[in-house]
Length: 261
Image 1 (spheres, rainbow, N blue to C red):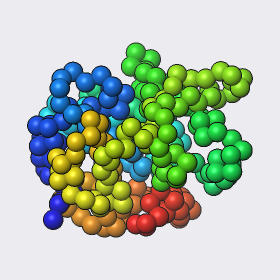
Image 2 (cartoon, rainbow, N blue to C red):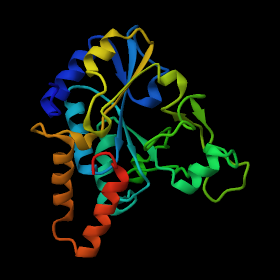
Image 3 (cartoon, rainbow, N blue to C red):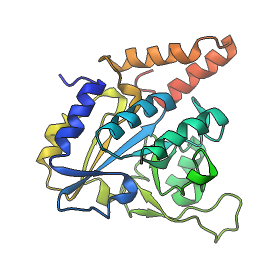
């Protein structure tokens, strides 16, 4: 059985590095050698702190990846807040890319599905998300939480509107991590489980670009089942909260991982 521990994760990356050049999303078109490319991506749904542990681990073995953050997470809040901005500094310091993780609410999903709006017109993109003025970098890639058929496939590039700007003013284009080109071989630990053993699935592929999605929330020093891991994190975050705030956190966990919570 594959164990969701940091030791197993490190071993997995070291083994994959023999076959692939492991790159952040924004660099997949610019490999430096002849190896197949493996995009390594993390959707940060619940905890910046757990993501930071993974970022440090990767840095220690010379791996760079992309960490996708929500601008206004129902769990970890506004990434512009001082306590989160200080933490974000370390991701860029370790050489990782900071990307945008988007959850479309039901109202926007309905509008996209019925063709009343284009998907790229409902993504509000922060131009810069990092800790200090010196370290600020533009967001270059986007992923979607619980992606629907409307976001899977299609072109690599999105051209979202700048928030508050006239209709024809766009941000720099974003790489859609669910583009057809990037889904040739796609392996994910969604809901804390692999659909196929990751090393086996990736080693066998002949796709020029493969993608590995790893959610930091499911990993730790010791192996745990997904629900057990979620309950432990909830207990840590809810400690000391009022009953009202703990109830709101419980609702947020259910929204972010409905198949586990």
